[in-house]
Length: 303
Image (cartoon, rainbow, N blue to C red; front, side):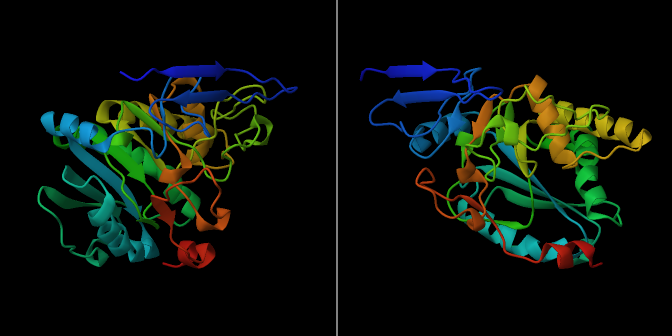
């Protein structure tokens, strides 16, 4: 067996910030990016796993994967592209249920799906403000995790609908608790992370705390762990609302608070959530899940 070399520098202190440094090589594996968190959770990049081995393991377990999106109001326009591209790239060869939360059931298309794959449309209320729609996602995922998902799938992947798959996303992402590095803050010093800083908020994170900044548009894990995450976020939001507090980035702020105290067991690199406005940096060998270009104001505010 080839020798395994690991060199790790946990902390490079610069006043109030730290930046973990790690190099890891195994048969030419990546040495240009961070591959492990300080708590030894793997960070998934191209070239750090063997798809064939992982697929065989998950097929042996007969794993079922659910993927949730919210298509509220005009966001139903993104569903077709989302599912069509997922059918080309997402969990190919595995059992998948697309859970589409919407207030416009009649607007959801009937897509052509591969064997072992299906769509379940779940009707939910509409809300006037897009911020409210964003925050209510945690409540709905929490509710259905306990009432339905636990009986139908083993893992949940919770993402935004206004996206398209553009490269393979497979079982390499699955773990008990999954977080995704925010593409806009990847590599930034901790002091620039846009955590909630209002001390009174349940999402508050102090300036000297925090490991990474995670994106609210891509998280997941086992149904049991996703339930715990969404239960915390929903209850924290309701507690803040009772005190007339709204976190700076809504559900994303509470997600980051949860991950501060409950570390993800696997972290997805920005390959798994990218926006072309950030260009094509050298570390990004593949762009697997891309934001669809759109006018946010027009889409969010139209009925």
